[in-house]
Each structure stands twice: as C-alpha cells, then as structure tokens.
Length: 385
Ligand SMILES: [Zn+2]
Image 1 (spheres, rainbow, N blue to C red):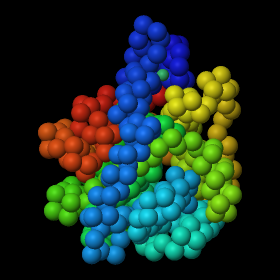
Image 2: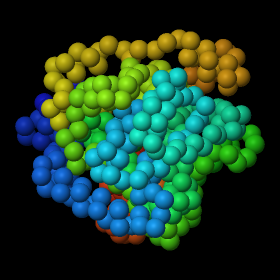
Image 3: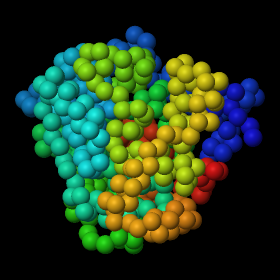
C-alpha cells in the first residue's frame, strides 16, 4: 500500500496520484490553495477589504452578516472574529435537528449572550426528521448527515433573505478540517427528496432543503454571497480552542463534529463501521500539511479506533423506532453510492460555466465548484474497510 510521504493519504483515497517525490495530489492541491488564500499581510488586507465592502452592503439594514452556529470551535470563533475584530453586526443562525449536545447549547448561549448577538433558531419537526433519517439509512448511502448539512446551509440563506443581508460566513478551514476526497460524500435537495420518496413515508415539509430554483434566486436576485474568513487567517485549532475556553468559557466536547449527537453517531460509528469512512484521515492530513500535527503522531493516532459511547446507538435506535433486527438489516445492506440515485449532479456539470461566474463573483465556494461542477460524476469508490 503506497502512502503519501507528506500526509497520511494512501491508495484507498479516490483519485489519488503521487509525484516523483512520493507526495500526493491532495498535498499539491493544498499548496495551491495556500497560495490562493494567503495568511500573510496580503491575505489579511484582502480580509479587511472584504469586511469594508460588507459594511457598505449592510448600510440601512439591521445586520452585515449571517453566521451559522453549532456551538463548535470554528463557528464560535467566527462570532468573536466578526464582532470583536471586525466590528460587524452579526445575526447568528442555528438549525436544530433535535440532537444538540448539552455542551453545544451552552456554548451557543455563552457567545450569544457575551457578544450581544441576535440568534435565529430553526427547529425541525422531530418526527419528519426521523422519517428522513430512516430513509437515508435504508438507502444505504454514507450521506446520513446530508439532511442536517443541507438544512444548515438553507437556514443561513433564509435568515439572510429575511433580513436582506448580503453576506454569509462559513467556518470551514482547509488547513484544519481538510476537504473530503471526491466520491466520499455528495448531497443536494433532489438526492435527499428522491431517497425519501423511495424509502420513506410522508412529504418533506419542515426540513429546509436547498432547491436549485430557490438557491438561484438567493444568489442571482438577492445577491447573497458566501465567504470563508478562516481561509485568510493563520488558524491554529489548538490555540483557538484555548483562547475560546479562557476568554469565553467555551467548552470542548471531545472531537470534531461531536457537538451534535446524531453527527457523533454517524461520524464515530455508522461511517467507520459500515463504509470504512473515517474523517480523521482528512482532518489529520490537513493538520500535517499546515504544520499543526506531526505525520508520525497522526499515523499512530489513526490506528486507535474513534471513541464511541454505546448508549448513543441505543438512543438512535429508540428515537428512530428501530428494533435490533431492523438495525442489523440496515447495517447488512450493501453500501450504495450517490450515483445509484437521482441527483442534481449532471445539472451542476452542465451549468459549469454559469457556476464559474458565480464562483468568480463570490456566490459559491471553490470546493463546491470543484467537486460538484468540475469533477465528472464519480465512479463508485468507497474506502476499503
Ligand atoms: Zn499527501
């Protein structure tokens, strides 16, 4: 098994190639992004200029920016950054899939209160959410969290539209979180709704989905842009966590994506057990590339299975109304891939020139454009367990 000399990606990662030095194409892509999104004085200047424009766009409105909050490290830090560092008027948005951990709720409250930020929470209909959750499990695809992820993205647009805000900030950092390899995950509104149509019961009424026509309206008519400020900052995760704890009383919940119990269940149990997908591969590799983790340390850490509290599996089965036998059947279904179901993927590929324009004007992110528009529909390739 060939492994990259710099990160920990090996031949099981889809579309991986190695150069003469034995370094993978994902490390090369990282270096390109490092140049494109500099963290030196040039990067900071760009950030300041962007913020200036946001303030101009926010004139006459109640807020300058919408920030999605989860109680996690990245979104909490963004609230601090936007208000304290850049003096922006923030409205925070939260999609509640009813699986928030206690710590996440406390973290959100601490920041909202201390920074005097308005919060808009959208709570999904619990029963409907469970029906969709079950559909995604029965479809046997790895995107079990896609209903939550897409709803989060949609809620940000809804809040922006409501308050006529032109900017949404996203807390992603390719230097700490990394980008999942192509072919691992895919999501769109059509994908989720078609799966639910086939495997579920009842209509999707309460779960906000990013339908293509609505999304176009938000970008083209309402001119709502997306921006990732952490791309321009020397974002050191450990230092930031320490700062959040010391200055705000923020609490660490023990791991990436662990602020939410369904997310914890999917990332620490369902994905590794059923699909052999462990997101630490991306996270650790990103941290190595950005000099925040040693390769040897990562290779040791990845050998230790992700922690998992069994009582969460009990809770999930109980809340979904699944018997042990039904759960076993779900786990034994052969893994499927998004290419097995109808999606918007081909439409995104056909609309590539249009999305290129949207990318250049700051309406969509580079990772969306690269994965959804440029890459042709992926072959069925999931990690080897
Ligand atoms: Zn690499």
